[in-house]
Image: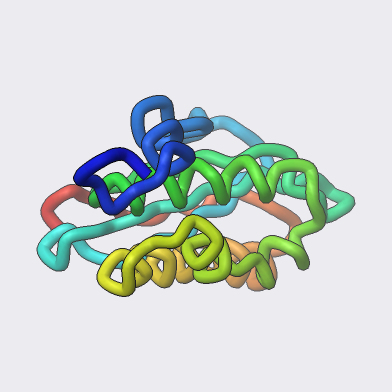
Length: 142
């Protein structure tokens, strides 16, 4: 933990240098997206998963509005999901990740929003298989 901070060095590392942030190009194949949260409530996340025909998450991207914990959790989840089967993404527990990081209870709500966005993308994939770009409205005003 940093002195006077509720976050440990791993959270700060991912907050200061988020991995995989951004969005895929509009013409990227196999991309599905899911969103959760709302800016007016303090955090909003859109998670994009690029899935190949074999059902493997080839790459991840995200857009996020929120506290350092929300940003770090998106970054860490995106790294964890890359290269794994989509069924693992559906079961990935961002809440357990928040527990491992020692986040205070108020910040664990961020984990739920990130999980919801990932699961929304998985649901969209399952409903639209084979993968195609699913457009999700994500605005910073939502």
